[in-house]
Length: 226
Length: 58
Image (cartoon, rainbow over all chains, first blue to last red; front, side, top):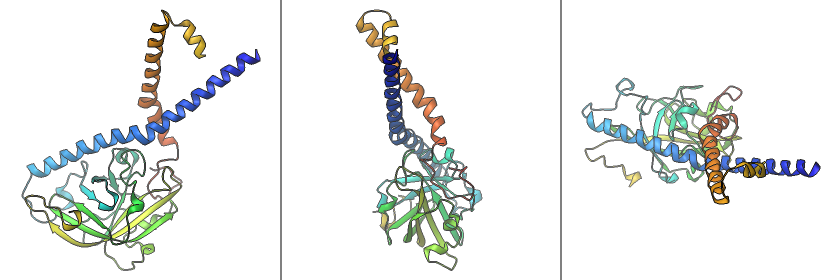
């Protein structure tokens, strides 16, 4: 009787262990497979749209863009992860597709072509594409480039906050005080979770716009990406 | 539990092993397709945004 119960308990515990192991594989591997597949399909779609709808000189206004599909691509050479599609919103169903999302809540992010403000982005540290996995490799002075149909926005990283509370919404405000800046400017903020594999704190990287470059016919990337 | 399943599968040992494999793959499929996607948002491993509320967001 007791032996039967114990062997059942043992089998149950082994099963729980296997399921937890599978969950780790799911979170850290399978969600990446799905998200990367999604993101690259969406990204290709956007590049096709950009090609088929040429013209429209100058920076695109928000109205000229279909923000549903994504507004452009983020390139962070220090993270060595290629291009990251940027979409509107930071809800799980947006970010889980392997993209970076710009905040609409609790603070509405400014888009890069606006005269001043903070282009605040979030993306996953692990799983679902893990687009900001290597955020700790980004150092002051590194380039962060945002690519739209017509313009390269070249930012330079000037401050980071390696650990902060998840309720610290000031980091994505138009003038993020903790970065050391006090006057309005054209900022970019990358947010993700830290330490890796957990969501205890948030990791913040700030950059500011140094210049913009017009996209040419060959889409020659700016010097920072070459 | 596993012994009980093994004893109740039909056929020779090879057939039973084959059916077991199919059952295992079926369980893994259900876990990856339905159970884990449901469970993941409920677990505190993947919140990446800053927010004001008490954690109801990403």
